[in-house]
Each structure stands twice: as C-alpha cells, then as structure tokens.
Image 1 (cartoon, rainbow, N blue to C red):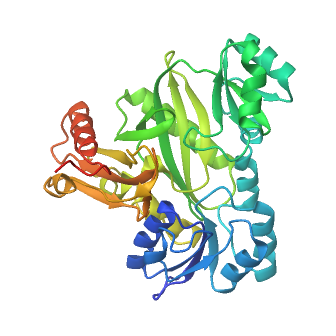
Image 2: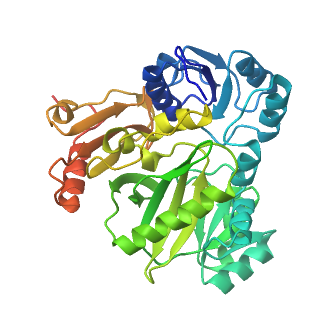
Length: 387
C-alpha cells in the first residue's frame, strides 16, 4: 500500500490510559484519534481530536464513531463484538483485532477451550455450573483460582478457593458465570507483546512481570530467565498469534513453571500494561505498532534498545481523593527515568495512575535496575507530605 500524510482517522472504543498512549503515538504519524468513552474528559481526551461520550457497547455511539473514522479498534474488552461486526459491515470500515477474536477472548472459559483445541499449553481448568462443580474442582485440583468468565481485571473477578466448604461463599462473592483454574507452581510470570500486521507477525522481547495482589507492579525486559525459556515463550506466543484473527497488538501473559514449562495464562487483544516499557525500551513502541497494524501499515522493528524496567504508580490513598502526585522531582532528576502520567483526576486505592520507566544504557545488572526503579516509584505518593 501507499501511505500518504496527513494520515487517516482512527476510531478507538475506550479512552483510558491505553487510549491516551495510543494518541501520543498517533500524532507523530499524522494519524488523528477519535475516542469513545463514557467518562467525560477521559484520560485520552487531551490527545484525541475528539471524544464521543457514550458506553463502550452503545450501538448508536459506535455508529457515530464509525462515521468520523477510517478504521476502528478498541483498547478495552468491554466493547461489544456483535455491534462492532455489524458496524464494520454497515459502514464498510475495518475493525481490528477481529470482533470474533474479541468474542473469544472476552470469555475466559471460551478462550481457554480455544487454546486447548489449538494444542497450546494452558493450566488445568474446569467450567463451573454451580456449587457442586466447584467443590469437585477444588478436590480434583487441590484448590483453585475461581475466575469470573467475563469482565475481571487487576484481581477483580478472581478469588482463591482452597476448601470445598468455601464454594458457596466464593460463588456468591463473584455472582457471575465462573471457571476454575488450577494453581500453577510458577518460577516467574512472563509476558510477550505480539503484533500482527498485514503479512507479518512480530514479537517483542520476553518480559518478566511482577505482581502483588494480582496487580502488575513492575516489568523487567528482557526477562531474568535463560535463553531457552525465552525462546520457548516466544514460540508459544507466536502460536497464539497464529490462532487469533485480526491485526493489532496482543498482550500474552504466561507462566514459567518450576518444571520449565510455558503455559498461557490470559490474552488481551490490545496494547497491554506489561508492554509499556516499549515506549523507551524498544525501537518501536507497542502503541505505534498497534496503530501501524490496524491501519494496514508496515510494522516497526520490535528489537530491544537496552534493558528496561517499568513500574506502575498506584493510588496509595485509603479513600478516593483528588489526585496530586508528590516527589515528582526525584524522577525528573534521574537522567534515565521517564514519567508517564495518565491524567486521572481522582486517586483511588491501588488505581493505576501512571508509570515510570528506567533504562540501563550500560546494560548492567537487571536486579539492580529493578531495585532502583522500585525505589524511585516508592518515593512517589498521593499523600500530602507533612509540613
């Protein structure tokens, strides 16, 4: 294809921090962004040409988005794949990743079944139809992680169940359709950011992800594991990409087990928190490559520039309050540290408010780089220092 500038307009369902970073990547390419989000003045609105205020699955709002866009994508799985498919046909406008892929990934049980059918390794899992099913699963798998089939993120929608007698309470707590997954004795958690273009598939270097309370706290790239494990992780991620339809970036979360296996945990059909490091640490960020891919443009190189650690800035408040971040000077004073603010006006407990990334031009000790990054991150606070 021949690319000319000014570029096309890309419509994005979702206007959170991912939409904001898509907008920041789109501008240098000459691409305009229009975002659809129910929150007025959403985080992406300052960098988008326009925001349409509406629910992620509102058919009329998505039609309004399609009318002013040359292509559609989404940055949140709450988009409605049926509506996206209908709008794509009605307006003759491409939607990527494919709505069928979104439909598969939205339901964790369907997602796991599709992976198994393709011969891709996953943890043991069981669909749960009621209390009896869950009790049997807990006994068979020696304890499980009970997961909401749809809508869970950052630990929401997950609850561990170790005792069959706790089954009823766990099901009542989630209150939705669920699946049970075995606990994986993992050595570390990994992530591969993959991207599908018109004719090519690429993966970024394997990243190690560090979670606490099921919320991603930091990522280390490349992962602190051996070359064989990294190669196997990229092989499994490539198999996942071959299974899924539609162009764009995919976040593929993996377990490296204590026995050395690679198992797929979950997939996100969009840029992913574990790939934020690519903005400074890779030759092309995941956000730029998502834009290139969904528009059918050539992909940018995914090579590592230098070892990189990224750490999330989470709300450290006890109750929701107006967001003011303190001690920012410590990040600005570090020549290899980079600050990303998501523009959210309210800090809430453990809410993702931004992230910092620290690169290592000397390509030294990644343990030390992680310690330094976490120390810088931990010095930030939304609690006003005492006078």
